Amino acid sequence: MKRTTRIGGLGALLAVPALLGLSACTPYGATLSRPFEPVVMAGSALPGLVGADPQHIVGFAWDGTSWRQVPVQVDERDLVSPGQIYHLPTSSYPNLSGTTTPYEMLVYTPPATLTAGYTSVDTYTPHDADPTFDGNDELSFLANSTGKQAAGSLAAPAGVDAATRQEVVVSDPLQPAQSGYLYLFRSATLTGGSAGTTGVVYDFRLDSGSYTATYKMGSGSLSPNGTWGFNPEHSTVTTPSYTERFADRWLNDGLAITKGGATGVDILDRTHYYVTVGCSRSEDTFDGGANNPGEGAFVANISGPVRAIRSYIGANSYKYTVNTHFFYPDREDTVTELRGHAGLPGYGTADDYTTSMGGLTYVDPQNPKVVIDGQPDTVTPLAYTTGSPAPVAWQMVRGNQGSVVTVSRLDTDITGLNVSTVYQDRNPASPAQCTGDAAAWGQNGTNVVSPVSNVPNTDPTLGASPPTFVVHRSRYMEVPNLPPAIAAQIDDQVRHPLQVSVSG
Image 1 (cartoon, rainbow, N blue to C red):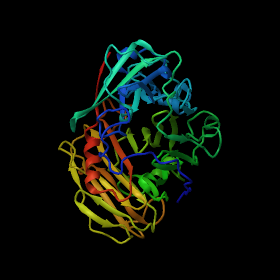
Image 2: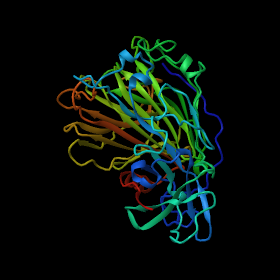
Image 3: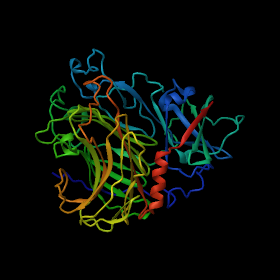
Image 4: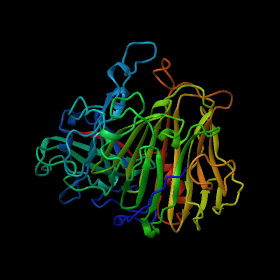
C-alpha cells in the first residue's frame, strides 16, 4: 500500500559553503569550521539561567565591534505518564513492572507560551510542570551564531539583565584550535526568536482536522480518540536546504533538496521501519494498518527559532516506543527509543528512493560507486557486534538531485547484537517489499539483529531494569554529487560533536 504526496516549492537557499568544512569562520568572527552544526545544552549545564522564563532567555554574539542578537531556542521537557499522552483513563496509566510506582517518560512538552519564532500544535502531553527553565530542559543554537570572546568588562547588550550573563565556549574536538563564543542572558522584553530564525519551518497538517478531536489513538483511549486506523496528514518541514513530507505518524514519504543548486525533485519513496523477518511489523502497521490495531499518538509538534521537533509514540505492541525527529537547516536527527517486549528477531530502518529516478549512485566506505538503476548489485556490508567498536559506516546517495549522507549509531547495553548496513537495488524487489511500491531503488539503511535469540525486553512496564536500546540516525541534505571524502568528514563530525563549557 503506497500513500503518496507531492512536494511543492522550497524556500530560498541559505548561503553556505559548497563543501562542508571549507568555511573559514562564522559571520560574527568565530573560527569554527562546522557552522551549521547544532549545539544542544541541558538546562543543568546553565545554572545561571535555571528558573528563568524559557521564552526570555536570549543569545548574543560579539563580532569585535558590536553585540548581535542570534536565535536561541528553549525546549521544555518533563516526566510524563504515557497514559496521559494516549488520553487514557487514569486507571489505565501504566506502572513500573511489579510495582505501584507510575511509569513516566522524559518527553518534549508543548511550549506554554508562543512568542516570535515558535509555533506548536496541542497534544495531550501537558505543559512542563515547572514552567521555568529547569535542569532537564534543553537550549539549542547553531555554531554559526557564535562570535568572538567579549571582555568581561564589556557593557551588556541593551534589553538584558547583565547580571545573568553566561559565557558559552564552543570548541571542536577535531580542530582544537577552533572555537566560538555565545553569550546568554535573561531579558524582560526580548525573546529567543527576536533575532529571527534559522529558516526551519514545520507545518503540521492533519487531514481530519483538530488533533485532540479526531486523532485515532487505539481502542483504549478516551473519546473522541478511542478508535484505531490511519491518521493521514500532509505535513511538511521546509528549511533553506530541503523539504520533507510526512503522510502519517511514521510515514516520511518525500524529500527534496535544493542546497547548492540541487534540482529540488522528490527523491524519496519512503523511509521503512520494520522487523527484520517477515512483514508483520512496519511503518504501515505502526500507523494503523488493517488487522494490526496499534496504539499511537503525538507527543509534541514544535517549530522554533532554531529547530523543529516532531515526536510521537507507539509502534503496535511496542506502545511506549518514541520516535523523535529534530530538523535543522541542512540536517535531520532521528532518535528512536525502542521500548517493547521480547520476542522479535531484530529491527531495521532504511530509505527507499523514488523508483526509476535516474542519475543517482550509492557510496559508502567499502563501496565507492554503485549505480542505482534497479539492477542487483554486489555490495559489501559494514558490520559489527555490540560490545565491540563500531566501524566507520556512513552511507550516501548522490546525484544532481542532491546528496543524502546518513550516519547511524546504536546506544545499547545489550551485547552480542549484530549491526549491519543493508543495501538493495532491485526492481521488483526480492523478497517483495512489505510497504511502498514494488521496487527497492537504492534502498539503504541499518539492521540490528540478535544472532542466537530474540532481542530482550526493553519495556520498563514489563520487566525490572530493562536494557537501553536507542537508535540515532543523522541525515545530512547536501550539495549535488558530494565527494566521498566530505561524507567521511561528516561521519567523523557526527561521532565527535562540538563541545561546550560555561562560565558566568
